[in-house]
Length: 174
Image 1 (cartoon, helix red, strand yellow):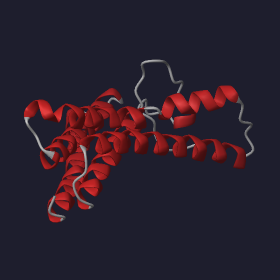
Image 2 (image 1 turned 180 degrees about the vertical axis):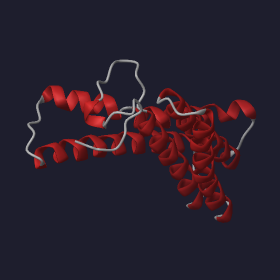
Image 3 (image 1 turned 60 degrees about the horizontal axis):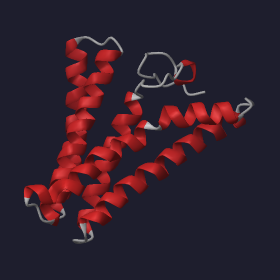
Image 4 (image 1 turned 120 degrees about the vertical axis):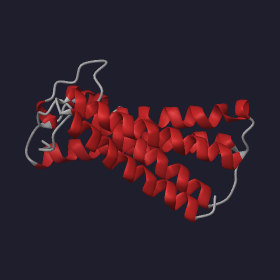
């Protein structure tokens, strides 16, 4: 099992995933992934916004599946049995990676309502991804019992990470 802390402060394997409970680490990771997808997509040229929406959602699902598989493979390596219940538990716990792709995809999909072309669409999706990344990191720290200062620090670190993606996109000229 993973020894990295889960949003509850317990090791991830000890966390009981209840419906409606958010995996903040997965949400932060998925948001950073979505921001990276938007930045990278812009570097290869303009294409219909539908492609960006599909790319965001498919990438989220593929990385979710990779995380589920990696976790389950790790369980087998250390000699723990993996059954359907464990597969479902891990899949639910990691689902926030996919959920984090949804808001940037929705932003891209509704961008015509704001009169945005492809470049504006990409920037809107990127801003949404970074904003949710900072929000999830800060909220996760608060839910884990961090002080206000620590929660602000978590938000600041994630803002810097997001701004690195923004700077990369800007440097690529899209």
